[in-house]
Image (cartoon, rainbow, N blue to C red; front, top):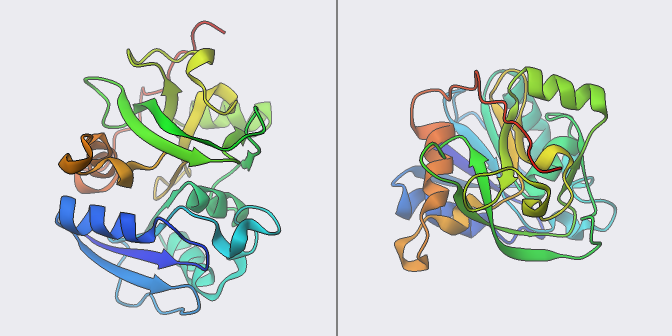
Length: 236
């Protein structure tokens, strides 16, 4: 699998993602400029990544301007043709703005920017909760009840916020996301988005490699198995 990492004006995690994929996970990676449109070097077995940051300064609404960039038009077509797309933090916001993923990301419930390690459970966390950093001001996942029920029924919720023991509780939710949702996928399971930053937890030098389990589970192991992963919410 080959990865392409898009660089938008205001991206600040593109190099982190590149280094994690190339140096920590030994993958082939290319940087892609937002004004370009050519994705002919990628097949649908490859993956395009939208990194975290503040694309176009978040001046209008997080991800709203990036959605109209030349490269995103190619990414939308790539995804619609079955290609893998992965958005992290601001990248998740862009995917929602592009309607490649359902729902929206709203201002954190406490109305403050949050930067800390949190625990998530989902793909790759069979043995224990994964400790992954977050750094966002607009990470509160929101959708109406009908859509939330559809996500649950289709096993499209790939990660939820939890405590260190893996329990999904209200206190473990850092931003007020509905049903503790930290990441979702589309119905075709080729577009993935999450607010936590796995690329910041891939190096032994940083003392945490839980992020590797996220990327491996989504893209480097056999196709993820979603059936039966709908979690039970507790202590609400």
